[in-house]
Image (cartoon, rainbow, N blue to C red; front, side, top):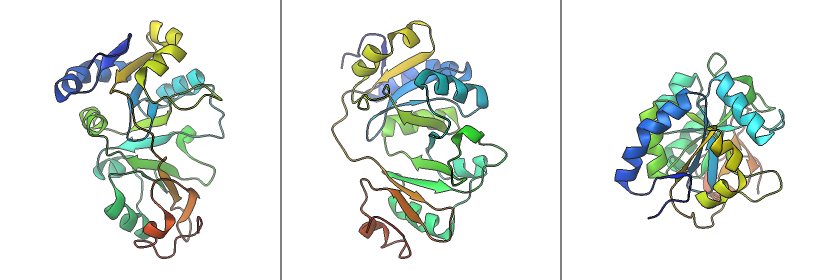
Length: 223
């Protein structure tokens, strides 16, 4: 596999392993990472305040639109201080890793305010993407996630699209792009708010509400 110009190969197990040291150094320096997920290419950073603000500025992200977090294990939720409610526990047990984003309470001491939604919760997904999951495990902590695109432009499905849209950020060393090949079209993750009395679908997606209700019968929304 030939990586897009200015992108780091991230396809084979050997390429993924070779990319880890440079990626960790980039994130520790507060940089932004472009990476493949199970749905689209995303942008992300470490979860400290300064790194998150770098991503906010790069994407011109409104304060009212927080980023979600990607994890590679439920133990990362404990380190973040996030709480799985009884409904969230059942949903996660069946659908994680997978295209399900859960909005969870907690994280007051660890998660920056920019990552908290209007309902007060923090959106989290355990990614099933093997290469990205391996990368997050090597980092040892969650990373932020938002679609890799400029406003009004569809999310990137290939690293070459990121390279074409963000050459200045790449040349300035702000953005490091991992090239995991072109991602086939797929539905976005389903987003379920688990901060209230009943879990509530706030964005329909890859997992239908009827399937989610098999684990959480009191699920509200997306009937």
